[in-house]
Image: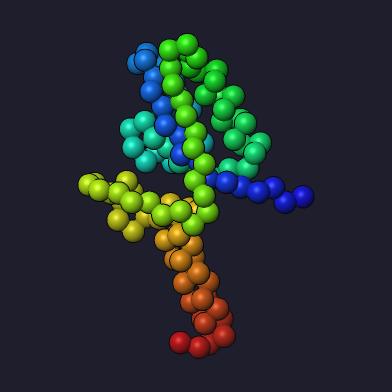
Length: 116
């Protein structure tokens, strides 16, 4: 069975420093930190439910705010200022990472056939 994966932007505003640290540590195990309170994740529906449940156990729903926004396939990212990732590191699922993967597959194919 093929399960469709989708990309999500996770942003949060946690009132308590203790809960903030717990949510941040949890998300670091499941997603890519892109800013202090912003993560991106590519997951299937079961993984998304696990993330929601895990975050839900760590927040105060009356005081904290956690939001997940779907990021469509092929959606680019516009950014100003310091880059979110070190130079040369590409986030999985981004158009740049897909293009780099296509180039790598093409190069491997040429090496296997002896073309250059």
